[in-house]
Image (cartoon, rainbow, N blue to C red; front, side, top):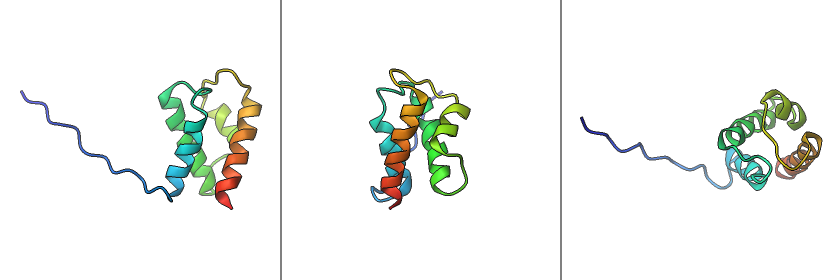
Length: 88
């Protein structure tokens, strides 16, 4: 039996909304140590930016993100401020 190499991945362009949202969450990686939690939060925030999801404070609670060293309210405020910067 042989194992095939994984398929190649195509990165989002730097100017895309997806890349901007993922970059914001990556900036808070010291507070969100689990990779899957970061990915789940990125998806929730991306949907919020598209007008389909919940704001950061609700997303952090409903997605059950493990947060270390900061309160949910503080992180939500910081995320909200960063999202406002990219929506302008």
